[in-house]
Length: 523
Image (cartoon, rainbow, N blue to C red; front, side, top):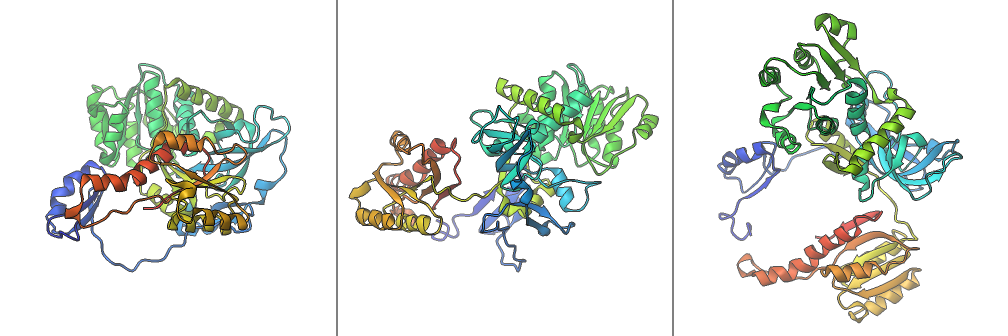
């Protein structure tokens, strides 16, 4: 539309941040034809010379690997290293897990940058996946069970963990959702319940409350009946409002104004508990919000204080810096069980999740380090197609679908294809395509189905045999009815969008509970 009417249309890509909406008038005044606004900053398309970045590439031979860093100090040095220990024989009480998604934490970013105090351990410490094998003594889990929990070295396809570190996934959760839960909710639970002994009727200040642990802490504190005060960047305040916090209990985490604001909001009483993750003068200001004494629980790693010094400067204040691992495996198992029970009862809800393919980990780490996210960042693990699984190709008898089907068999190793089109075997060239693919060693089913019809698609998916479950979905189907913008009509748009968009939505809804390796949409 813009290329046909360059003066009439301006294209603006907004991120939904209130600051971006406020920047819109000034952005339009520039006269630029295309703009993107991110957190209030206006960007325009320009050619620039930038360094090439190669995505992380798993070994082609199937050898065990995990992502880590050898030369710390820059996120560009993230790499994939051999991980033979993930294939080692299991000891009693151990479980081997095929990781599907892994949570990214502040510890991982500090570790990569060489800023973590002490031994940070393996990168990746939580995730979700499928049980592959159980050691002796593990009787309540079996291969194929979906689990979540603390998975040391989770930035790789397989890990070995102590049974006490994992639990069955709740029904209906995706692996990405499940991977976002263990550390943030158990950290918040351990800090507020075990260390601070937060009680109903008390007040708590949660710093950086739009992050994963912060959002978990707000939910838990409100569930226990505490009064919650919270800080976050101004662009994330709507997130805190969505958690049920009133404006007078929200302040910026980027200035020290929260001290006066919350002192005034509490009538000078301050709070009973502080859950902190900030540093330097922000810690000092937070401590001053405990004028009656109280508990200061520090989960940050960059400005740990001495409990004795804090007690001397702030009488009555108990200061505790902590790491979740110090709770011990038995308590971790108890907390994981208690937290998941709160989810099942509806008292807690997963935080917002941004999922990145692990092969784009450097970009995900940068997003985290610049605090551009809300909630939790999760890395999903790349997977090979299971040759025993079924690959569904919509528009499978068309020119594009046929190319995809041949690629699936000859390159990706697919052995079971379900090719779908509106005419099925009656489509031109369908029979010949099936014979060609069968000659290459694949079992091929060509079916007639209107994938934009949800009920018809559901019936088709029900025919996929259990012994060859759906492994991948490739949606190539589409109808061409283009033209200049002035010639388009609602009827022409409906004709084009129905098989493309409606079918994509139905495919998404009807397969989201399955363990797909790929879900591919052609434009």
